[in-house]
Length: 232
Image (cartoon, rainbow, N blue to C red; front, side, top):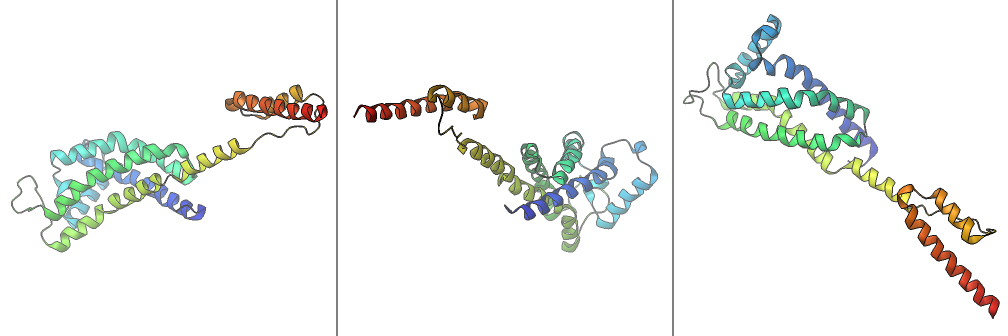
């Protein structure tokens, strides 16, 4: 994952994931919490077809706990989707790391109860679910496969951000800048003045005082040795 080509492929995968999530959230998921009048008949029919074809009880008659997840998707996730799409398709946007970690953890947390419901809920005895419900193991696994990418891709995102390729690059650049020690004039006319002026111009502003002090100390040491040799 540290190789630039592999990292770029992962960034493209994440960018396309967030890009595809925008219409799915707007036109399908949020129908369960927004007024029906906002959606044309075509989108309402699309949701009905999906719920009937895959026997998704959560989108047919969503319970209160599932609506709370959809409200979080509306308020927190939807504004983040276009930002994340831009960041990952552009690549190497270090500022996306912390928001991406928050999003991935939040999304995986919401998917755990959803997938657990599909796998372990006894829908024949559950009164909170209406409409068509998955009955066979095959129907349950099919429904899980629809939701599984929204658990797996955030997990990949979390691992990708925790490895912190952007953070390592930033640290490496800072270390390279700190290791660049300024060179002085080999034959300065006045070592005490010329040498300190060179350090003052070349040193980074944040380390100016430290480099000034070190160079003045080295200059005095060289001058002391010179005087001792001349005296001998």
